[in-house]
Length: 323
Image 1: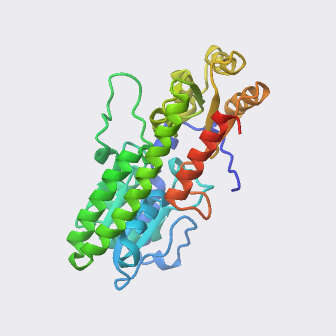
Image 2 (image 1 turned 180 degrees about the vertical axis):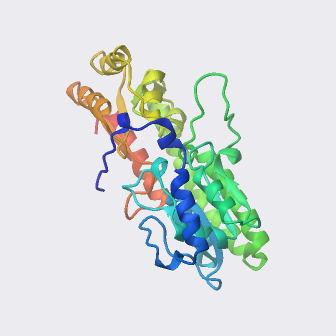
């Protein structure tokens, strides 16, 4: 996969977390003026037609793929972010996506502040009919913890994906009752694969419980915790990187020193975002011969959800095993 580098130190939190109001207004104006057909969008597939099955719009191809696994050929899925080189935090709306949302019969978003553009565009599209599945809400996690920040990357938590699968079956069966049996069978197959992923996490935990791990952002943290690893990265470092602010010098030194001290056994980092300070952490890990495992926020080219997560777990297990 081609790596896309973003200089996060130069971005501000509003840029990372909120949809550009100017872009939204422009997209809405285009849709209302009938210019949607002339718009091009490399990040969203063509809007489904009325006779191509239940029309689903997902904020990213992660949820789009899960919807396809459950819906099969009875659904038509539009993934707003479907390019592994795009950062969902920086997405800007366009008229074709607005049009897709206006016609959607079911919408899937991550929630938790990750993809706020969905709610804003759905409101602008005046679609008050389509149910919205919010993965963060479905997860049951406390989104306003007393300490720290909520980790919105819930698709790395397999129990949450299990819950989302059940909700997809319920909603699709309500929209398309004739397909209920098909949706249930597809979900059974998918959930068997999810159970296998959870078992692999347990296997890693059995061998490496308590081992220290470092991260650049909390993207893979649910997986690492389920695998029994302990995040040793200073919270101030990962939060600063995710928010696009400068890491204090003492925190950066504390982060890089953990590799030479032997405190951590693996570095798991988000390869879709990078900057000078994350590169320093990568260099420190490599200099200390600490294995490095890259992960992403969206599907790598040619992957589906199950194969992607299997690859992540295999890489983690191999790194910890010294393979």
